[in-house]
Length: 121
Image (cartoon, rainbow, N blue to C red; front, top):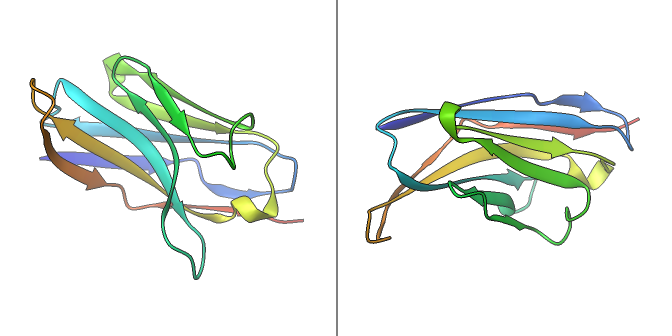
């Protein structure tokens, strides 16, 4: 079992910055991908960014150049630095953990409880 604990959401003005954190604990697989997804009111959950244990990243086009995902492998923690925030970034942000076997077979995924980011003046 893997548990995720998120922190860092809040209210910020347009153009401002926030940093989200997510720490995984429990039975951590040596091969895993962690990331952030978000869900705005009335919309489907969407990918924001992911990062492998080796540091390879993937971003949604809507956040490229503004958001940066990073990882502290020793602490099983990922971060999402969000700059130049826009009102359309308002959403609940969910941390995601995906586990793979040594042969890169997908095993399971875990979601965090979500943290609300509100961008408003």
